[in-house]
Amino acid sequence: MNNDNLVIMVGGASSRMKKSLETVNLDDATKNAALQLHKSLIPLGELRKPLLYYLIKNAAKAGYTKVYLITSKENKGFKNVIGNKDSNNEYLGVSVNFAIQHISVGFEKPLGTADALEQCLDQYPELKNTYFTVCNGDNLYSSGALMDLRKERDEPNALISYASSGLQFSEERLAKFALMNITSEGYLKGIVEKPETSKMGEYRDRLGELRVSMNIFSFSGKDIYPYLKNCPIHPVRNEKELPEAVRNMVTDNPKSMRCYPRSERIPDLTNAEDIGRFKVE
Image (tube, rainbow, N blue to C red):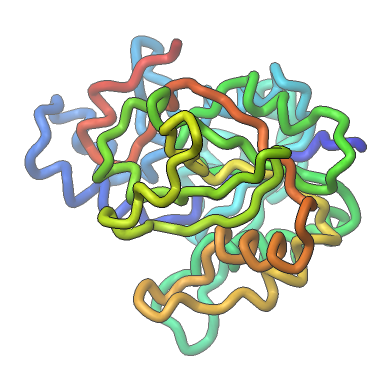
């Protein structure tokens, strides 16, 4: 199995982040940057580098050589950081390519993460016939987690299952992610996006941990593509969500997705207060 490709989804509007800037204690320069830039491009930490810098640096350390950035059509901020070419920009030792998530006809906003990945695979069809890792652009995944998804394995697909205690998030915040049911053999059995808080206890494992998906997966393009294309639109959020495509895939193909457990904190930029707390460990 050869997995040298990393797809990073950075197409969101950062609306929750921008709204929360009204009440957070940050200096004016940082606030202005957060208002004008996608959250993965906000200067952070002592080095004043964006989260995307640290994420791609970790990816290079883990052995990835090609990165595909899924952005909106308005992606000048990303090109200012990465490079002006649509493909094959050299950045931190990897080749970076841009994919655009276009807004579908009849809709006012992008159709979510499953749609973003589908459009990326349509624009770079070579990914449909190989293996790749996909993750969010507003979480700083460790090089260890990224390396786990490059391991040789018997299963065509895999993900990282994070222990809730290691993430150090409140239950209210955990409910904004996806929770998983995992078999005793370590295969993904079920996954639910943004569960009701009252039902979260149903997802605790035998150790009392919630197993959390932070939207970092390794896929066989051939396996996942039909489920991206046929992913239903959520009736309330009006989006095609990647965890739902994954749920449908493992329902049809049990034992097709290996879960690699990890317990660690992930710097995350959901809200504006996360900017001040950001620290590279």
